[in-house]
Length: 317
Ligand SMILES: O=C(O)CCC(=O)C(=O)O
Image (cartoon, rainbow, N blue to C red; front, side):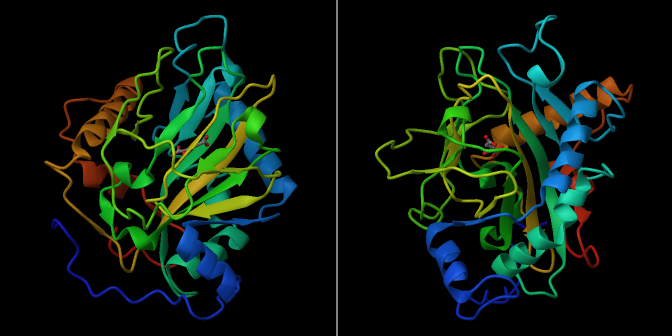
């Protein structure tokens, strides 16, 4: 593992149409750092994921590698349980139902157009089903503006892409994604993150950009069930509070082009604090399953174990 990858990266083709995307759509992503594809995932697939999520909320067949997170405002409440309390199921790479999302061809083909070619080997690195239950009034269901690369020890950023699919109508009222178009290239680098000083508390590992400039033009991305937004890991984004009585669910996967990406050493960088916290979350999970927690968990190894090939063979990650 080195500080930066020593590879000649094959250039990404932004001139020609892809397998799925037109040249204009690719250009839009390159300039803005995101693109929405309508109706990308059918309702019957989303229904499968919803059922599985509900089972997980009831504690059915929770796999060892998964983290089921509760909202901070209700984490210790005996009265709020199940779907009303769970904000996120993370790391479902080994789950036979939820991992179908990561392999869903209409999603994978778009990702290949954005970070590789039809022949690229993709790896699912980070998987989440994010549920926003109705906000308790403390505004803890907000997600501060951040860049996802803050959590990742692999590069180059241009060969990583997130697919995030709305599982129901997602709008400003229930906390849609908010993006700062073009922020992946301007300033085009990873910014310093910290926990926001919110009165009502902040969920675990929900870091936000330090000294965030709220005057940057931002866009509320309202989506129907099945619409999918693909975005760059340096794109500044977050989401609002769920001010409705219903749930707001989305499923997401961060893909990396495994032919190009390599682990990098983030020790001593501004990512170190988040990495320690992520290691702690993993250790807590090990304890829960009765496993020794004195193992020396290395951040890259944690990701190596978590990563799962979507197609082709595992290469570098
Ligand atoms: O689904 C959301 O509300 C935002 C999720 C997000 O930005 C993240 O987990 O990085």
